[in-house]
Length: 173
Image (cartoon, rainbow, N blue to C red; front, side, top):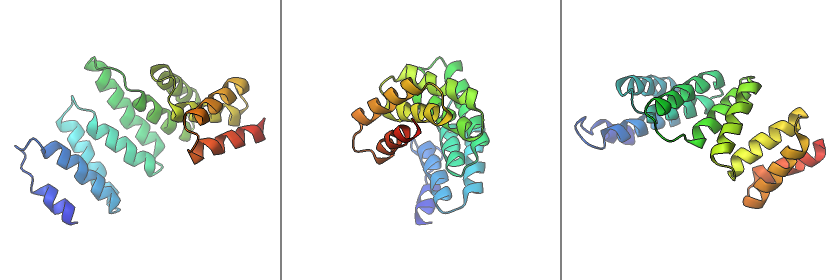
């Protein structure tokens, strides 16, 4: 609450205002005031149609709250804005949207996003793990999926989630 009060006092003319508003929304969510955070982030996204920061934070909050379809919509808009501004594609946006789509039952779209993220960042352990695990869990692309998880473990041998995926993959195989 004290942090929210400090952030509220930052004037709109300040170069820190936008960052303060993003932090404020995250703090609202932390305080279980998620609906307020969502309203604030949507207003920020509408106020600044060339920025993706509010949309990414919105997607992250919605995904954490298991509101996956809504999260995918927020990431959709962030990707659209990135493309419209001719900015470099960000693997994280495709990964995050892929996770949200997979969790909302849109596997074909999720797979396309995860493959795009992998294309943009071929050695990203989180992408290798998530896509490899998903394929093996679905009984698809078993050899490639196993190789991807093994590579993810090689890149992050101390990551419990990734090592667990390797164990699950061996079990499923």
